[in-house]
Amino acid sequence: MEHEKIVLVGVTDIFFYTKIRDAFKPAGYGLKRVTSPDEILEKAKTHAPTAIVLNMNDPGLDAATMLKTVKRETVSNHIPVLAFANHEEVDTWRQAKELGIDKIVSRNEFSARTLALLQEVTQPRTT
Image 1 (cartoon, helix red, strand yellow):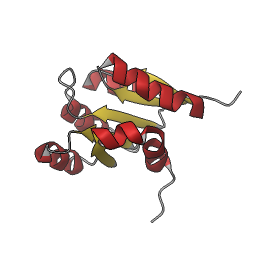
Image 2 (tube, one colour):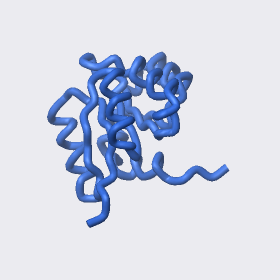
Image 3 (cartoon, helix red, strand yellow):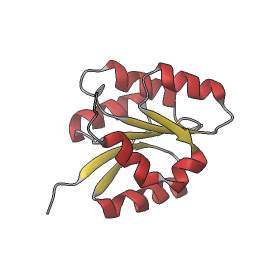
Image 4 (tube, one colour):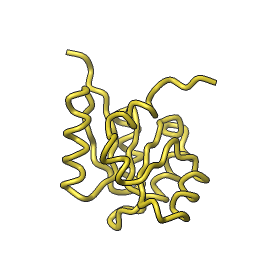
């Protein structure tokens, strides 16, 4: 069997996490939940993930700090990050872009195109 590709997921809402898992699992992705900057770094080192998915509006996460941590550390700064946030939260979007996020979309777009968006950010970059 092909080695499972790991995606770190910063989402505390269990129903939304399950929806993400159900979208990714058939395509051969395994999920690992992350809820803190230390945990995201630890799992990035341990699992060599294909991508990171972050809910920028999750009250149970410090997503901005998690993103800063990922982008600051050599072990993880190359991992593509896909985030979603409420579309009306302009400051959150601006901050995510300043922190080096690869792609940020609205929660609705993320829900509608979950797997396609992951595949977009994990494609080899062409310059």
